[in-house]
Structures are given as structure tokens and as C-alpha cells.
Image (cartoon, rainbow, N blue to C red; front, side):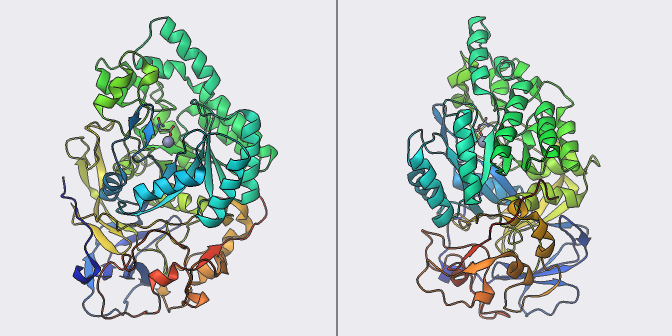
Amino acid sequence: MSTPVKKVPIHLQSAQNRLLIKHGKVVNEDEITEDDIYIEDGVIKQLGRNLIIPGGTRVIDARGKYVLPGGIDPHTHFEFEFMGAKSVDDFYQGTKAAVAGGTTMIIDFVMPKKGESLIDAFYEWRQKGDDKVCCDYALHVGLTHWNEQVKKEMEALCKEHGVNSFKVFMAYNFMLNDAELYSAFDTCQKLGAIAQVHAENGSIIAKNVEKLLAKGVTGPEGHELSRPEEVEAEAVNRACIIAKQVDCPLYIVHVMSKSAGLALKQACERGTRVYGETLVAALATDGSHYKHECFHHSAGHVLSPPLRPDPTTPQFLMNLLAQDALQVTGSDNCTFNKAQKELGKEDFSKIPNGVNGVEDRMSVIWEKGVQTGIIDPCRFVAITSSNAAKIFNIFPQKGCIAVGSDADIVIWDPSRTRTISAATHHQAVDFNIFEGMECHGVPEYVIVNGRVCVDEGQLRAVEGHGRYVDTPVFAPYVYDPERVADLKPVKNGTHDDSLPEHFQNKVQIEEKVCPTPTLPDSAVSTPSCRGARPEGQRNIQDSTFSISEDLDVERKSCIRVRNPPGGKSSGFW
Ligand SMILES: NC(=O)NCCC(=O)O
Ligand SMILES: [Zn+2]
């Protein structure tokens, strides 16, 4: 376990804002190149061979290693009050663990209580996250009820708070009915947002739970029995049909079963704009654990939708990822300790739902996907970072190794192995669903916004080092895929203080909101005004020399960017 590192005042930070990564194999979603990477002030400034760089730059030798974009985990629940308990990984512990495993950005879910203002809940989440995050983060917002006020607040969240995704639930006691789903999707479409869906038929589940408990089935095995896979598949299908009526792009979170994956694939073939996320849990474990004699073991695996009893499910889902029938992997990290899981000791329906995964996602997916030969390293990058960055409209700032992109980078040693255990992981939770799994692929260095946060395997995460990142509406990869061919990131060359071409192509620039934007329009990147950030905190190290001094990240943040609405299409990869 590492010791937590507290925020270091700017004047005491040591000089290490310049890094050169040499001799590695640079993996992007579309190609592998043998380039060196020069990083300064948190941004990739040069990519290529024989780079001319300033003296005093730290050099990391990545010979024999892959150099990957840092992972983006688009599905976490840190410090989340749910089913009578609060998840034990907070934004510090959770993002620290993320970084330890090679993830450099997470997207968490703001979850308003039923009837609560969405904006109030958003601020509550910012308060929980801003000072604690060890890596960048963004927020989706849950719609736990539906009315005109919600609609208004969705608009404000999109226009003023950098939110472009809203999650609706078809299960739990805050689920929406079909008419409400229709209105929520319609609103998302008009705003240029993405609708996310927890797809399970909540009414069927409630009846099944009643029946099972009446029959005396009270243990964790009842969890999967009450939510069989057709109950998931039916909801996926229904959500797709509803979304298609209003032409709303849809993102199905945590696809956990073969039937649900196939329902999604078929909807896509029928012309629905739908993207699918599966979980690392679903790719590496299965429902056999619900039959384990130890309550803590079986309850430790309870999440919704459940792991499936069919042991061929994990490989089936990996194949769907390989075929691009699914596009994204998340963790749905929502961790409850053994004592909290005991809330459901007498009744499986009261076991707080959720498992770990934010730390182990990268290694486990490498093991089950690349090591087995089902996917190659490029596809690994696509499903662990680039596709999420595209869907949530932060590509190529994130999810990409290109000139002008954030220096969120993992140097990955495919020849080393590690064995996962709750005894050695960095998460707060006292259980690990991947206990004992040996994984090839270890992050030897993890660079977060230009700072080396895992250094030769040693975790040096910094509380508060991350920023809130806006996710602008009308993601071209979702709303305007025909234009995507023009949005190629710059894969070599030097940052010359002007906006990299790929950013120019991508965005319409709109100066507003912040009082003193002094940066020229040409030097704009995607993140926009973020609140509650002390002046200077983003500058991670002292610097007396810069080859591109004009690109001041703090000032850069004061210009908003917005993507224009575009045409429609049924798919983009
Ligand atoms: N998935 C789960 O079981 N817990 C987290 C909440 C949710 O995503 O449904
Ligand atoms: Zn979730």
C-alpha cells in the first residue's frame, strides 16, 4: 500500500514538468508507431524521432514496452449512498486506485435523490470530487424522476456545467416508465446529449423477488434468479425501440449477458444509434460465485445486472467487443465492504449492489482480451479509452497519444505479471472479485496530466491533482459521424503554439463565461471553465524554460468550445 501524498504547494513542487518517453511502441486505436513523446506542462508537445528537446528533461526509457493512452473508466460510483450503505471508495481512494492500475480519467454518476434538484446534486458531486481526485474526472447525471423542472435542469447542465450524458433507469425504485423514457430521450436528443440506460425490467424483477422470497430463497443465489438474462435483454430492446422513435443516441451501460449483447447488436443493425458498454466484471467472472457457500464471497459478487451462470458469457462479450458490437468497457466500481453486504444476509434483494474494478480493469482486460489473442493492443486502446473519449466528446484531448493531447499516458509492460488481491490493492474495499487472478500486463509508469504518478511501479498519486473536465454536447462521433474522417489527431510533429489542426477541425470556438480570457483563439483545447479550482494548481511543477510558453493551461481553460449539431447516422466505427 502506498502512503497518501497530500497536495504540494506550487512553490514547493520540484521541477519535473518536462518528460521524454523514448523507444516505446506507441499504441493508438488505429496504429502502433515507434515514436518518442515529448511532454511539457501536462501536454504532448512533440511526437516523432530525433526530437529536439530542452536540457534537464527527464527521460524514461520505454524499450520493449507499449505506450498507451491512459485508461478512461466511464462508469464509477465513488462515495455513493445506495441501498442503505455508502460505497467505501471515495474520490481520493477510488482515483488513486484507478491511477495505480493505469486509468487516468474516470466519469462518475451524479445521482440526485428522487425529487432532488439535479443542479444541487451536481454541486454536491463536484464538492465530493474536486479536491480529492488524483486524475481528471467528468460527470454523468442520473434522472431518478421526471418532470418539467428536470428538463430545464438538463438544459442548464449541458449549457453551463459541461454535462453531455444522462442516465435513466428501467429498474430500481427510481425507474422511469416508458412514456417518461420517451420524453427523457427526446430531451437528450434536442440538447445534443447522450442517453444512458440501466436496462433491466424492474417490474418483472419485483415480482420475481416476491415469489423467490415467499418460496424461502433468501440467499445471494436469488439475485440472479430474480433477474435472468431475458429480463435484461427485453429492457435493452425496449430502450432501443423508444430511443429510435426520437432519434436519440443511446448508450447501454453494463451489458452483462449474451442475450442483452445480441439485442443491442440487432438494434444497431436495424439502424438504432446505440453504443454498448460492458464491465470488466462480466469479462472475467461469472454467476457461479452466487452459489458459493460463504455469504461474503457470494454477496461480494452481487451487482446489477448480475453476473451470468453461463460460463461462456465472458468470452462471448469479449468477442462482441472485438467485433465492435460493443465499444466500451467500464468498471461500475461501487464498492461495499463485507459488513455492508450483510444488510442482505436474510434477504438477497437488500444486498447493496456493486463490485470493484476501477483498479484492475486495464490488467484484467489485457489478460482476457490481448493475452488470449481475441483483441490486439489497438483494440485494447479503443475499448479502454478512445471510444469512451469519442462518445463523451473529449477526443482527442483524451484517449489518444497525439500532439496537443493531454499527457495521460501508461507505459505498459506486457511481459510482467501481477496477482490481484484485496490484501495488496489500493482500493478501500475489503474484497476483490478478481482475487487470485494472475494478469500479464503491468503499468510500469502512469503519467497523469504530465506528472509521473506511477514511477517504476511505485504509486505516487497526488490528491487534488485531477481536474473536472467538461464534456461538450453534440459529440461529432455520435451526432455527426460523417465529419469524423476530418478529425484525425496529429500523430507527429511539434506543437507550435497554435491550436493543433485536429482541434481546429473539431470545434467551433466560442469565447464566453470566464472574465479574462487572454489566450488567442488559436490556442484552445477542449476543457472549459471549471469551478472550485485554486489558481495555479494545474501547473504541476516549476518551470523556468518552455518551448511553448504561450500555451498556459489555466488560461486555456477559460474558453469554452462547443461542437455544432450535425447529421445523423447509425454507427461510426
Ligand atoms: N451496478 C450495480 O450493481 N451498482 C451500482 C449502481 C448501478 O449502476 O446500477
Ligand atoms: Zn453503475
